[in-house]
Image (cartoon, rainbow, N blue to C red; front, side, top):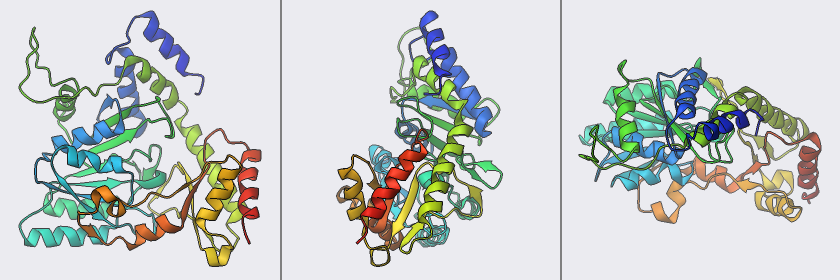
Amino acid sequence: MSGHEQAYIQSAFDTNWVSPLGPNVDGFEREFCQSIGCAHALALSSGTAAIHLALKLAGVGSGDEVLVSTFTFSASVNPILYLGGHPTFIDSETTSWNMDPALLEQALSERAQRNRLPKAVVVVHLYGQSADMYPILAACNRYGVPVIEDAAEALGATYKEHSAGTLGRFGIYSFNGNKIITTSGGGMLVTNEDDEDGALIAHARKLATQAREPAPHYQHTEIGYNYRLSNILAGIGRGQLQVLADRVQRRRQNFDYYEERLGHLPGISFMPEAPWGKGNRWLTCIVIDPDQFGADRETIRLALEADNIESRPLWKPMHMQPIFAKYESVGGEVAQHLFEHGLCLPSGSNLSQADLDRVISMMLAARK
């Protein structure tokens, strides 16, 4: 916590606004829009809820195909199945580790020839870095397919002059406990592609509140969800938002320190920063060549774990997950290589230099 949160939380208690509406919710949505430069925002209980609503508003239903990054967490994909759709996984490129625009173009072209275009494309901005959005948007616009940006990991990152998550039809953010700012649990759905009245977000707001119609009694004409964020947690978000720039700076400092100490060693390469933007370096990620470094990814991970230091492999691609094995994948070799050789190092905003040195020392000790 930053120290700014308590005043907003106290205000919620003092005014008895504890439900999923109130001044903190309104303020968090307004201030979030100002922070990232978007027109409309809706505070929700999770980033997964935001993806679910974005897909529903994009018209995804039973039998519909959605193209989605394979190199991601399952929360990017699960809501497709909630709605009865089916995913097709698109591999990464090596410049940013995000969705490969050329493979996406190939997949869209093939489906256009069969007159079976997907209902939507979900692009994930991985580990705090934006995908190459202009060619992705150009391909999708050419075929009239809406783009949903999963920026759960990328708040504070940029693409060209834009905030990551503000270029597609919808943007998704997460405030889970491990994200760069947190409300303990929460998310945000944003859009710029809307009229002045915010009809899209207004519809999403209705769906997130059990789709209750404006009537004195409980009236429902469509299925809704209980997805709103509480006024207390929104207060935490308002306090956290004030230190977003500092959190990005601290994460980037972690990355720079790791790279300075380890980047010259044979067999270790760091997640590259693509020329089209600036990442938030949410996590410091490395790829290890065991023949050159003298230890493989798993040896290093277990050595850190033995000293009570948590690290994790990079995301296991969705096309390799048992639950999604039956679905099509376009490519997959890049994501598979990153998973098999990649490691996420401790990256918290509150790590000291001594903490970082301890991680580095254990990694070096694990070499043969």
